[in-house]
Amino acid sequence: MTRPIRRVVTGHNAQGRAIFISDGPAPAVYDRGPGATAVTELWETRATPASNAGNDDPTVGQPQRLPPPKHGSKFRVVEYPPDAKRIVALHGASHDNKAEGYVRDLANKRHPGFHKTDTIDYAIVLSGEIYALMDEGEVLLKAGDVLIQRGTNHAWSNRTEQPCCIAFVLIDAEPV
View (cartoon, rainbow, N blue to C red):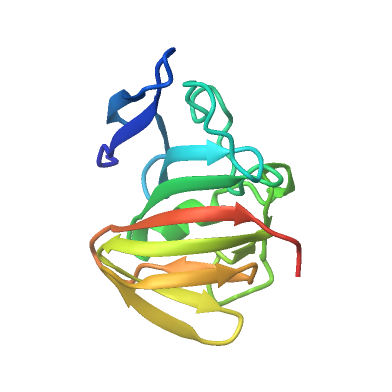
């Protein structure tokens, strides 16, 4: 069960004054079932520079996709279950992810979660610990650590018995 994340969103009223638009659990939660990652979409922009006009929630009613829209960004929290559960779910996942905007690297035998997106990602470990895997090498990240992921082929490996929560800001980038 995914931990609800409180999301507070600000905006403007008809007079242009700053207001709170919403305060409650983030509405766009994608829990793919036992052993799979759970994703909570917190916000999305569809252009750079981003527009702060209007009060519509860009996360509601949208299909869940890994990368942000072209020229846009995404802010999300991902809960990674232990690999003992997650690897089983990954082996059962669809291998055709181009429609979702990323490519899984099924040839990489180190971990079935290897993938690549055309983004720059800012990752902040909120709780737990996880290994960031590259084609060459790996590093253990713990709560409070930050990783800047620059369009590289990578995977996440949770080798503990507890979930790991990571906040991500994904920004559309040119392919390498």
